[in-house]
Length: 250
Length: 349
Image 1 (cartoon, rainbow over the protein chains, first blue to last red):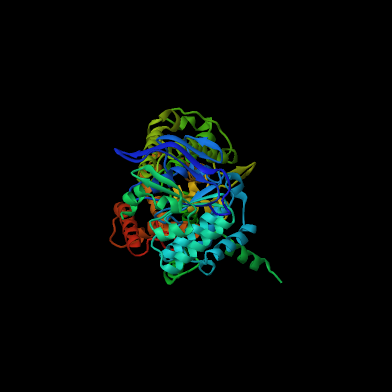
Image 2: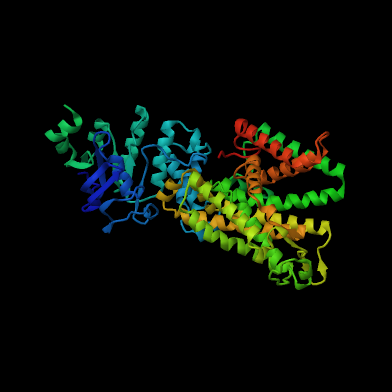
């Protein structure tokens, strides 16, 4: 566990499940994500990694079980409550506000949530500075006026991470943040995640790249067929025979 | 020294929504030039009387288009229901301002209130807004294609109510002799006075729309349009945002309806048929999504086409209506093929 990790759980699940038609994506899954540090979720395709992220962020509704975030047990996780639970996410398939500029993609998550106040809130004020800081951090300040749809794949990935950073929350759920990135951008994203860990945030990411997982991870969760196969210290978990057999295939 | 203009320019640059596309291409420039020149020449050719009539029609439809653009363009909710709110506003004005002195003109008695215009006009907007709350709560349960179908259903239902609730609307007979704007002895009875008042209302509606879309609320609307679920994930109660903009838009349509019935001095259900609603959506798309100026330009194009078709040689009078719809349809298809963001828009459907 890194020095940034703090005692307690950032997120816990108790026997959560989710099915799509007759297919069970997550089955009675109970796990705990430690507060602070980097947790990776790995598993073969269809093992329920993205479904888990969707359930924790309220993007999908639970069929059963309880999600515990910030000490509160929830049987219904509402997506619009994510900021108040200090949690945010990125998506496996990039979901930016495509016909808005890179700057507006950041500004939109910095603005007032209450409808009446949002109606009278004008100008950028301090949020403009914060947006600049975020865009500089992900290396996109020069592209601030470009529409999100006009950015390259890697830049879009970075902008999506930047949008999550702008939320300034305790827990970040990043669904495959390294997928499809060329090496220089992989290094950039690794640096962003390392800095988030140093700031004491809880970073949870899904990845298939075991080298990155080994390098960044404090805590590893392995899923298989929607169930928890193993979890714990990354080096320890990756050495277990059931993990090697089920996922790594050696 | 910072001038007022430079401050305004700086504020415009900071606004999250660019009302007129910043990257003004040749097409936009030409669209503006051609339509404005066409309008100018046409009005000069036809004379002031014609200009007053066309100008009033333009102002009323422009209020409708600007308000619909809040929903369709800025929020991405393709609504066919707008004509229903227009109708509610028109009937509210007609029923509230009609007096007992008009009773003998009617074959069927309906409630009469004899309200003055300026008391009835806000009620026209509020009535449309109240119905919009009820409809909006239901609509919030639907997205995409199903949303469009449900708004389609509302347009059909509202038309049926106007047509069949004869005890209130006089059904197909319509309501005559609707009050003109008046304050004490000052009655805005002439076409020029009514045009001035309609343009004032259009300016007010455009200002309110601009205030809405250039606020943080407007930025969230754009995000909802782009990805409703993602906006929700980032903490926005999307249903509330959609309901608020829906109601604001409906109230503006109600206002336009009140103006319309007062101007025409007559309403019947056929002014609020489904085809009119589809026409209105086409106008908003042709002008450009998420641009107030685009809505004005779209209505201008529509009004010029409508009136211009009267002067097409060899076109029988009885075919003018159908020809206008055909031309508008062709224009819409061409735009979707070659310029899906509309004449001056920057967003695609």
